[in-house]
Structure formats: C-alpha cells, structure tokens
Image (cartoon, rainbow, N blue to C red):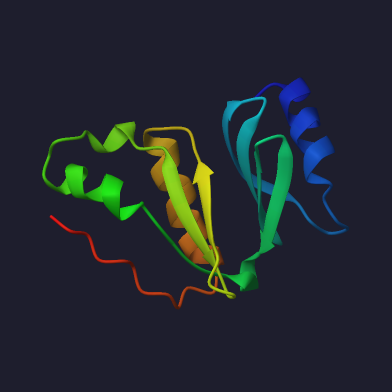
Length: 124
C-alpha cells in the first residue's frame, strides 16, 4: 500500500497512543476497513466508524449472500459485505475488498473480537 494511502487512512482513523495498524482492506478512498491492536475501524458513507474488540460479539456473511455461495450459484470470491455485531445487538455492514482479503479480514475479526454470538441460519 502506498504511503499516501496509509496517510489518508491514518488521518481518518485517528489512532490512540499505543494503538498500531495491523490489517487494511482498501476498496477505494471512500471505503476501507482497518484492524488495529485496539479496535476495528471502517470508513463508509463519508464517515469513520469504530468498535473496540471487546464490543464486537460476532461477524458473518449476510445469510442472503451466503446461501447462493453454499448452493454454488455465486463464487465465494465475489462477496464483499460482512456483518459485524456489537454487544448491544446492532448489526454493522462493512464492505470489504473481495477475494482472499475478505476472508483474511473476517478471520482476523473473529480472532480479535469477543466472539459469543451464534451465526444466523442460512435458508437454502
């Protein structure tokens, strides 16, 4: 990633003391996701949003997008939406870069978060 993109992300993310960048999913200037040592930060709809790792209780593919993947009607590398759930029960939809990066970010979120939420059922 270019130094100018990292600078742009850093300006919107406003990292705290002892907070370091770990992983970035960058789609475009107005749409990216950053995992830090302290929290998940994403930039969508012209605003930065963040949740501390202890506030995140789960993450999943949206069930309506997971079903076609399971039925092999949609290649798994075309999905970009990821739902993240906070401790208050709110659902936040992140749009990530498709392909391998999507699964790396999803897996990392599950490792860092306070994962206690069951995945929604998928209607096949």
